[in-house]
Image 1 (cartoon, rainbow, N blue to C red):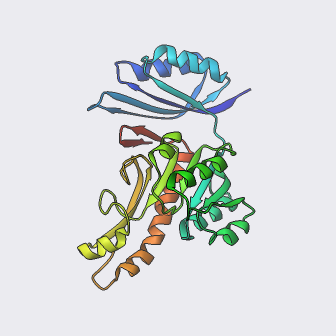
Image 2: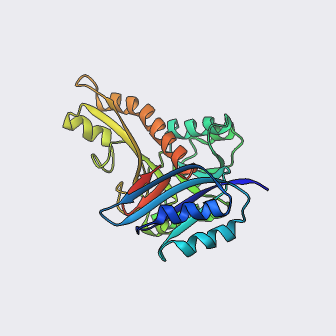
Image 3: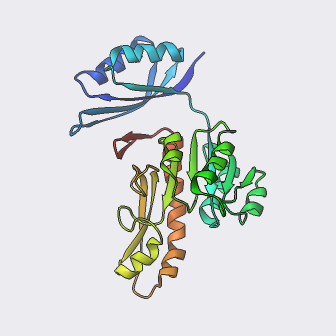
Length: 278
């Protein structure tokens, strides 16, 4: 039976990789529908994303690709289907609401498994979409105690990514380490500018003429994880920081939406603290 798959390869660069991989596909009578590759010359890393169609067995193809690529190769064969995501939020509704609307309209290549929040403010919004909502109170608990409760809920679900849709809490190293490169955050500034709390106020006080938003993977370095998507909008001296905050919300929604589209369609490779995007 003919099927389709995304083949993702990340490895040490060496001569002839594209030729050997393409020849393998040809010999197996697989059609290459789309192919992109990139070499990070500074670090000697090779990245390749290929869409193939034809008759193949995933484990066999995986073994054959591993046999012709360097020993450090990370090879993935992914048959296209919607991913599963867990959303985390606090009180702001714009990013969460945008994702939920895209989900119900069929524009999000994923199913939303649940929403987790440290406040109950967004429960009525989430319930309208018939999605499970979990309010896990943080007040009166240590950060570690609260996160243990959150992880117990998260781990009940089969999921691919955790999306922080304006989840306004700093995650502990223990939490981040449990879900390496699986947690995506939307930060309300054009990183690396204005890291941390209230970047709109920081931007206003600095007198900037543009503000922006950044979607990135979460690491233990606050707001410094690999960047997936960014954008900016103009502002001027007449705007207060709260005006900038209101204007910035649309930018945040669009940046997070673009980032999710890239990640959910397997277009993003993590390359150290950067990303390669096809």
